[in-house]
Each structure stands twice: as C-alpha cells, then as structure tokens.
Image (cartoon, rainbow, N blue to C red):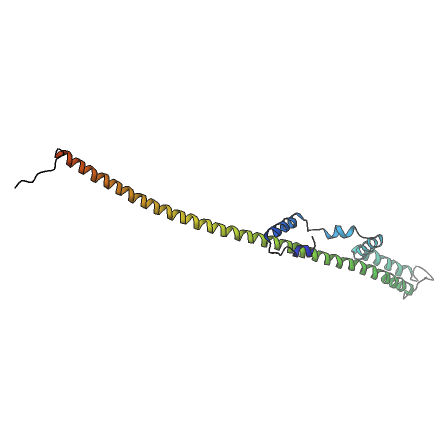
Amino acid sequence: MDEKEVTKLLINDEDEREQKIHELIRGKRSLNINTESSKKLTTGQKAADKMAQFAGSWWFLGVFGAIVLIWAIVNTKLILQSPFDPYPFVFLNLVLACVASIQAPIIMMSQNRESQKDRLKMENDYLINLKSEIILEDLHIKIDDIIKVQKKLKKELNDININMSKMNTKIEAVSDHIDLRRELNGKTNYGGKNSGGKEPRLHN
C-alpha cells in the first residue's frame, strides 16, 4: 500500500475503516531497500559501485601509494641512466590527473545512488510509521469503546444490585409482617380454646 492508500484509512465509517485496517495489517510494508534496489542495477552501475568501494578502501591507498613510490624510485638516475619520466614526474602527474578525472564521476554516480537509497529508506520508514500510527489509533479507539461498555455494564450491574437490595428489604418486611400476623393469629386461637369457645362474661 502506498501513502495515498494509507491516508484513506482516516475515515469515519466504522465498517469501511475496519476493512481497511485489516487490509493494512495483511499488507507488508517493510522492505529491504538494498535488496530491492540491487535487483534493478545495470552492469555499469554495479561496476561503478565496485570501483567506488575499492577506491574508498585502505587496500586502494596502499596499492596506489606503492605504485607511486615504485614509479618515483625507478625514475631516478640511481637506477636508470636516462629515466623515461624524470623528476618532477610530469607523466606521473598526468596519469594521476586522468585517474582522478575518471574516478570522480564514478564515485559521484555511486554516491547519487546511495542518496537515492536513503530517500527510499526515509519514505519506507515514513509509511511504516504512518501504518503503525493508524493501527495504534484504531486500537486506542477500540479500547475506549471497551472502557465505555465496561462502565455501562458496571452501572447496570450496580443498578441491579441496588434493585435486588431493595427487593430483599421488601421481602424481609413482608416476611416479618407475615410472621407477626401468624403470631397474632396463634395467640387469638390459644385464647379462644381456653374459654371453651365462649366469650367471657362480666360479673357485677
């Protein structure tokens, strides 16, 4: 998914957003830029990279320094009576200038490709960060929804507990009232049996 497709996820429709989020999660965004760019290199570009890599190494400095030193020693009158490039080594300076003039654009080509790789890496990192940000935002929204549902369920459960407590209080009150009625009825029946079922007479 490119940047345009990623930014389309910032929508309000929940179903469409959820579908886009799953598509984003399934799509792999992280790429190895070195591997991807090496697949598209031409033979000349590969040769330029190899030459730039060799020219920027200690091995090149050692070999090049040895060649210059041997050239200077050979072209002295101590070894050759008539050196082909006597001091101040004009031909050596010409060779060095030609090598530098050829080496400089080759190194620049390699550096330009490296800067292009850096731009691709930055773009890839940006898309990865944007993908992570969108997924984290979606998770944050879902967690907020879960917290809201939990609060609602907690409130409903609290209301149920309050109603049950009130019902238990009413049931206890009714139970006490029934027990009191039964106790009063029992005393009334006990008094009626003692008087033989007749009302007591009042004597003057």
